Image (cartoon, rainbow, N blue to C red; front, side, top):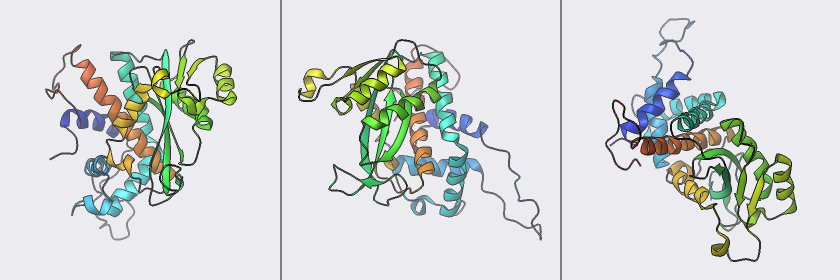
Length: 283
C-alpha cells in the first residue's frame, strides 16, 4: 500500500524532479570504469516519503535496491539544495493562482514535538519533563495554508520566533498585502511582539494573559488545525534527525504536501483536469 495516494504523490514528484540536478547514470572518472549504477531519484524519493509519513527509521524502510545509507546521503544532498522549500513555494504559488491565498489574516503559533535523538534543533522540552524536544513556529493564512516555518529548540519562547516566522512567510509568498492582521495567542502578549507588528505596518489581535482562552479564541484556531495536519506525518511527531537542514527539509516537505492536498480538494469543485482524483478524502 503506498504511503500517499497517487493523486497527491505524482504532482509532488513532478515539481520535485524538475528541481533535481542532472546526473549521469554511472559516475564518470572511475579508474576501472565499473562504478555501480546510481539509484534513481524516484526510488529514493518514495523511500523519503515513507520515512516522512510513517516516521520510520531508514533501516526499517530500506530495500535491496535502496539502502539506508543511500537515503541518508540523498536526503542530506537535497536538504543542502533547499529543494523542499522551493517545492513548497511553488505549491503556494499554484494555490494562490487557482484558489487564492487569504493573506488579510495571518495566524502564527508554535508546536513542541519530541526529539529523542538530540541534534542541532533539540532542547529541553518544558512540557515533557525536560526531555529533548523541537519547536516549530508556523504562519498560516485565514484558511490554514502553511506559509512560513521556523524550527528551534523546544525551550525557545514563541515571542522571539514571531519575527523569523513572518520573514520566512515573506520569502515563501513574496510581498504581503498592505493591510495584514496577525492573530496570536497569549504567549505573544508582550511589548516586544506589539512593537514588531507595528514596525512591519501590520495590526495584531493578541490574546490577553489572564483571560480564559475560549472567550478570546479569535481567528487563530486555523493555525492549530494546520499543526494537527502536519503532526499527521510521523517524522514530525518524533524527530530522529540531528541536522538542522534535514529537519527543515522534512518540515517544508510536509508543508508542501499539506498545501497540495488543500489545493486538490478545493480545486476539485472548481476545475476539471485529466487524471483528477476521485478520492473524496486525500490523507
